[in-house]
Length: 129
Image (cartoon, rainbow, N blue to C red):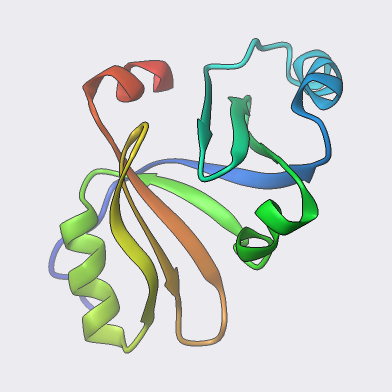
């Protein structure tokens, strides 16, 4: 199969659901040897990225809508992701939305994988370096 235009995935983050971000972060800082690159709140959740992880903390009720999402991929273009999903028959579960880091979209792919895609704005993108 020949691909028309490759989508550049800048980073993929494993999602880790935790009860308390402040309690969880020190372990992940020590495991990765890195400090959190991003930390913010969104829809009742506290989030932080450290190393290859995206930690999401909140009440069971706040976390419930997100637990089925397997990973977060930082991409060049949400619009390109929308095109690919339409072409391959995936389902848009949420978005596109404006989020603290840019724009996001949650997709269920054919075969069942659920992935959040995020196109970072300039300030958030600088944290990838």
